[in-house]
Length: 303
Ligand code: GUN
Image (cartoon, rainbow, N blue to C red; front, side, top):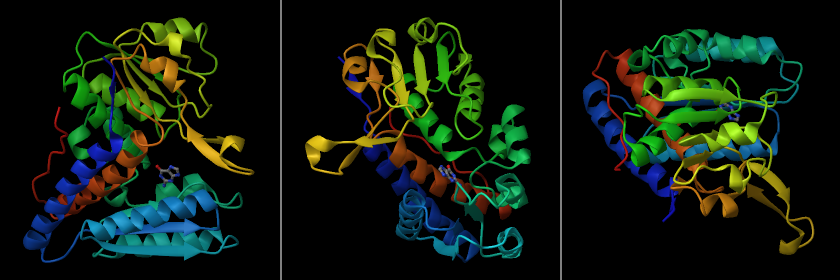
């Protein structure tokens, strides 16, 4: 029997834990955890994501602020805002939504965020801590951290003896995902567009994480029977069957065929996506507690 992993329910459970932890933090620190989200320009998908992040932060009882800058904002204006947020004691987490307009150097901006407020986990300090296995002291990128909680809920925390294959080598998902799996004792392969016989590599995966951004690229018959399949892809494709000009979201995995072989699989939508925002909230509480030198909270989903 295949389990379809309910990312919405998992995200709701994590958000409930975060809401409790935020209330406890308010008691300990006499202020709410603070999250600042910065958006530059009018990218429609980014606006939707940023709106959802702000809403969820308020629902969790955070001090939540959003800065929307025009698409022609100068890089120096974005950097000045980040510097101001770095110095603002009421702000524990800073997220600059990507992509940024082409005239702004995204690396310069993401690296300007103070590492202790870097709830995206993009600063080289946090990347280095994760790579060195210093996970308890790192802020870990939200999508892989959320995916890892889903994997733990199916497979437990110790992945000794299991082969995990991550398809995709991005800094935001593929590489940090591989580090987390390695930290949990999995044997890890990172595959990508230049990998020879990708099908064979995928067929050897007990845990398969697809993060390539290509609709249904991972075929159903590439799935090892019983494997745990985590589909990070969110691809918008035309859906003329729903009416003219309509679209729908699909993942990187051919879900229907893969679900006949997998032990557990995340759907798209409703899988990893909701966990990403919930994990951002968890990272914000983690950052707030660390800045106040309070003991860390451990996030877990029921298995
Ligand atoms: N745009 C798409 N995904 C992300 C993310 O995880 N963080 C930020 N800052 N921007 C994104």
